[in-house]
Image (cartoon, rainbow, N blue to C red; front, side):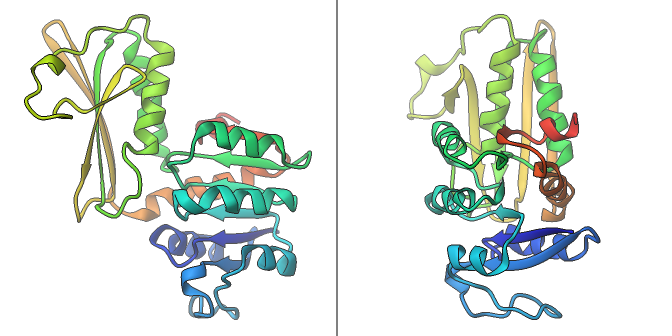
Length: 259
């Protein structure tokens, strides 16, 4: 049994992770941490309450893996607390500087893995992979990412990862037309890795991304939609199982999907 602690357990994603872990035969939920909900019951049929002290919960329950879906302002401290104690980390919180992640992984004890994924939906990983492949042949590309209005960062981690993958694979960087005609700042979106990204934030959305390619006489659209947070759970469980036996920083669910 893999012993799991969920950080951010009372949040929308954290609650879904709790349910998924409880339903997995090879996983054991040993602790739930969320400082804003300390002392509250976790879930029906679970005989412990939510803790507000991550370090204390780790010391008391000895988890193998911490899953973190919290906030960009808290995640680095949570990772450091877990790694310092030899606990593998599966992180879905986005908005943290990649250099910080690398630094945290470097200071972790040997045999401890920091796994970070900008998106845990298997379909989203495939969307990013297909977009990177398409960019080899259609270098003119823009990204539209759409999320709920409570998302803490923009652009999304998925959009940033997609832009990075596109930058790695396309052989040329075409001029992004129209920026010189902006009559309102930002009308043409943000430029990341020389890829234009547009971020939409509206209530009712969950997580959605469309990658639009243009070429001579043609367009190509590659889109993924998560319409429910349960779409992320198979990837989270894959992450929990996949960090066991791994070491150092691993970025992207595709690293585990490919074995």
